[in-house]
Amino acid sequence: MRLARTTLRHPEEQAMPASAPTWDPAQYLRHSGHRERPLAELLDRVHPLPAARPRIADLGCGPGNSTVLLAGRWPAAHLTGYDNSAEMLAGAAAHAGPTPEGGLVDFAHADLRRWEPERTYDLIASNAALQWVEGHLDAIPGWLDALAPGGTLAFQVPHTIDAPLHVLMRALADSDRWRGRLGGVLRTADSVHAPAVYLDRLARLGCETDVWESTYLHLLQGEDPVLDWVKGTGLRPVLTALADDPEAADAFVGEYRARLREAYPAQPYGTVLPFRRLFVVARKPR
Image (tube, rainbow, N blue to C red; front, side, top):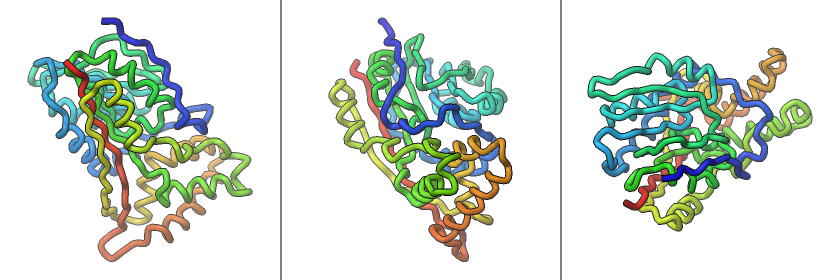
């Protein structure tokens, strides 16, 4: 089978910064329990894979926590986690190696905007990464070409670009004080498509497709927990853009913190962060 060579380009990320965000694995993992639950629920809807010892790609593997969950579900699989962050891959390296059931976990550098599958996979999975990838919708046909018959494409993405934590961040970045430094840095409102768009694209390609959304009410603890959450994800482009000016970074974070406190008030039992996610499971015909 000829594997399609894919360059990911997509209007979802028209405002991506010229340089990719710098990631902090420790910060990201501070809320790992909340971040891993959606992946577990996604994998619960994946049909049995076509091979007893499947090949699995984990796109945007981060520090390897998602790859570990995949290995727990398919312990005999050869799993490869792909990421473009040297910091994240350094954290993931601790999880590399053989599994007790005869499988293997490894990691490789890849820019998912230009990822070109070079082998056949039984599962291509992605956990909260494709919202950063320009062109992921247009890449789907090439990814399906790289799946074995009966293989599955499964991913989940945050569908929160219209939530206060992002709306407030974009408004602040576009204010007179910050526009010159941060114009075009943050993701735009079309970074994730409507659920029906994914369903239509995959169904037209002949896949058995399951698309749904869930809204989690994450109960967070500690001081300014929503800010702490977003420092590991959506705020990374701002922190990267201002990394050479610590005073400016502190000033932006201070203004943003005040707005988040008003939007997400602390309660006696913690701070509630409503967080919507979009899930897609598409099985290729046999």
